[in-house]
Length: 235
Ligand code: ZN
Image (cartoon, rainbow, N blue to C red; front, side, top):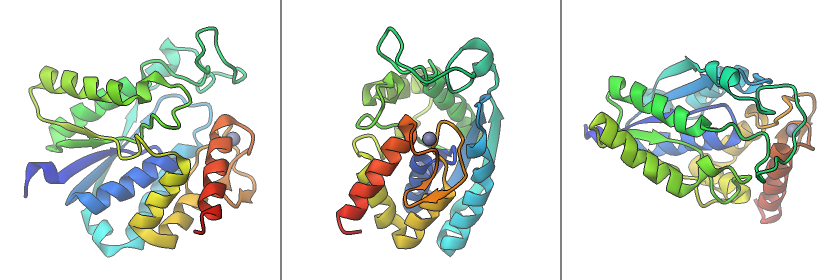
């Protein structure tokens, strides 16, 4: 097996990372997953993860055979060293620097670095993340240039040839739904619609056509709009 045949997917339990996981299961012979508990105010994402992994296994026997270990990493230090609306009970708003206070500074840099460390131990040579510059809410650590620079830094610092893959980088939310459709048809779209969690407020009461969530926070708005565009395009 070629070393580039194995991937570690940053898998949070949201729409984007679940689509990335399906993408990796399509492209690589061996796939493992990594998730981070960083003291999120709403840990719904973390509770849906095991269900999603089981559902993906059930969807396709080939995916079941490829899917390996899931690594849950405690990164609660993030909530201790930063103060954001993701980890503390403060209202979501735009900060003086123009960034929303849902931005956790350094989070994706740390996630990728920790993932690279785990991948090094596990012999996995591709890291897959759902970073997206198209719908990135202004998060600078979702930019393509940030990920490319990080890939260089990680490989220099670890003397590796690890590749950072970001299949959603240039897709908007509608195109992310379309990618799910391509990868796993209506069954995968349904699984992502009802099984993943994106809402910043952790709301999981009623199932909307686009999935669960409060419907009003920036994450829900983006997800709902993308799903409606996807449906309106005839899917
Ligand atoms: Zn919401």
